[in-house]
Length: 138
Picture 1 (cartoon, rainbow, N blue to C red):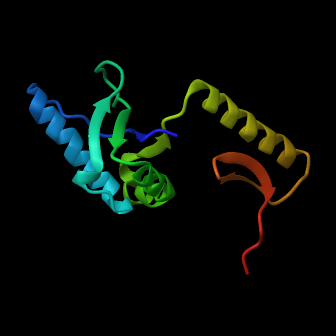
Picture 2 (picture 1 turned 180 degrees about the vertical axis):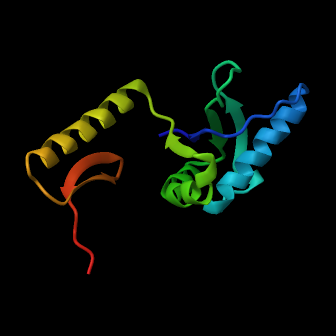
């Protein structure tokens, strides 16, 4: 796992000055990630992917340590709820192989649910994804 997370649907600055755009990106990221107790000091770099266009580009946020990445991912639900109006989503920065594996696990989960198995979830334990039975909450 890297020190990066990807944030989708962040608003982009229309300023022509590069430094002003960078400042806007950083302040927007800090605003969004503050729900996960991430401060400006926790962010090493912010980079927008792809070329400018009519849609907002994905934003890669490089954090200073992996613990901060885990904080963001664990609190991604809070962040999404706090910014529902912006339709923001967050994911870890996965390789093609990791993405393929995650998709296969998700497909297996859907197949098992459609076959009638109940109370199944995908669990991420010590870096390994697996499908397990969920424990009902009392």
